[in-house]
Image 1: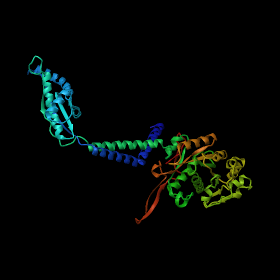
Image 2: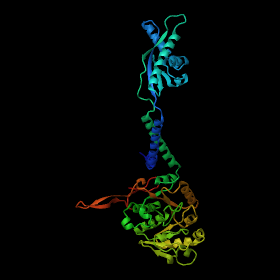
Image 3: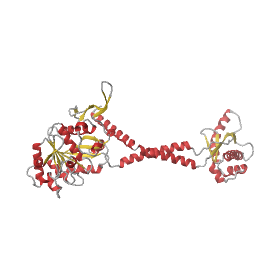
Image 4: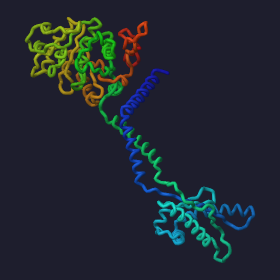
Amino acid sequence: MNQTEAVDTASAADRLRVLFRVVRDGWWIVGLCALVGGVAAVGVSLTQTPQYRSSAMLYVTSGTEATVQNAYQGSLASQQRVASYVRLVDSEAVLSTALKDSGIDMSVKDAREDVSAYTSVETVLLTVNATNADPVIASNLANRVADSLVQYVSVLETPSSGGDPLAKVTVVSPAMISDIPVSPRTKRNLAAGLGLGLLLGLFIVLARHRLDTRLRTESDVTELLPMTSSLCAVPVDSSLQDKVLLDFAPAGASPTGEAYRRLRVNLGFVSVDTPARRILVTSANPGEGKTTTAVNLAAAFAESGKRVVLVEADLRKPSASQRMRLTNSIGLTDYLRGGVENVADVIQQSSTPGVDVLASGPVPPNPAELLASQRTGRCFAELEETYDLVIVDSGPVMPVTDAVELTKWVDGVVLVVRAGSTKRSDLTSTYAELQRAQATILGFVVNGVSDRERSYRYGYYGEAVDPDGRDQGPAVIAHASSDAVREEPDNGRPIYR
């Protein structure tokens, strides 16, 4: 299998996984529709009046001579006549005579609705059916119609010159009273209702997925932005709801910690010859995890021995410094307005070793103008002289232009997407805005991805057991690190084993 076939196979497998996930997540809709369909089918069946059917079988013969040739020709003639006799069953002459003989209080019109006839192909057998809510009436009506047909055919087939009829109909099996209703068929209706409900539920789930513009997985974003690499998928982590920064010491082996390590490693492979040292982290809209990503990316780089400064460049709604228990009363805006001469004077040391923070400072009336000024470029240049990496937490792209203005002062942009929240239209608009600004997009990060939706994991867990056989609780059995084996496929995206 060549590489193109492998990619096509992987794409097909991804689509199947997405389809399976969509159906799995919407199982309750499918189940509810099937249940409603089944209940409706049973309800309809219970409201219907039971109908009973009785059948009389008749045999058609033609000719009177007993030679073999005449018998064969008579059989062909009988088969030809049977089709005509079927149409005679609900004729006025046959039904009126049958009703008169049976004494059934029914009009010819009603009897025509209750009576039917059919014949098997290439046979001389004719079956007369009568269906009625009263099984006795159904049986009586079928027998009387059969007798009436026998008489009427005898009259029709008798030559005008006299003699024996050219064909005759004989009742070979009279209709019996049936105690089993032919309708409603509750079991069949139940199965049909469940099946139709199931199909309707699947249609609703798939239609909802098709109409849902929110992005939910890495593959959704990759499909939307095929020229942009996926840097990592960050799983749902309840510990990040109350705090922005992971404690990498005890949490370093967790799926979340490994995700930010993978982000750090993948950023190193985006541009090997000229690695990005000024990295802007942004998103399409607020609340999609850009600040959390920026802070933990800084911590992940610091863990590898780098000196990192986090710049809180979201000057409209700053939150990083406060969530890191630092003050934002002084910081970037003081330097940009010329309030302080050296940017080092407003840098704060965080509780994470190797990570310093340049807080936002007082909220200015003109954030975009400040960030677009040459002084911002000098600020980042000074920081780059002191630190190995400058991580910039900017504002979102869709509401304001601050992040777009900042792109000219950085080496690349990390675009943050929140699974189940970011809309396709917002992401494509954000991507277009960054491209118009000629920004280098390093890749994207998907936040809030459930474990079952992640395409792969870097760590897996088991129960550690000491030599005496005692359970020591959850322990890391294995996890990948930054020195994992790397391959370079044609699309330029790193793959790790």
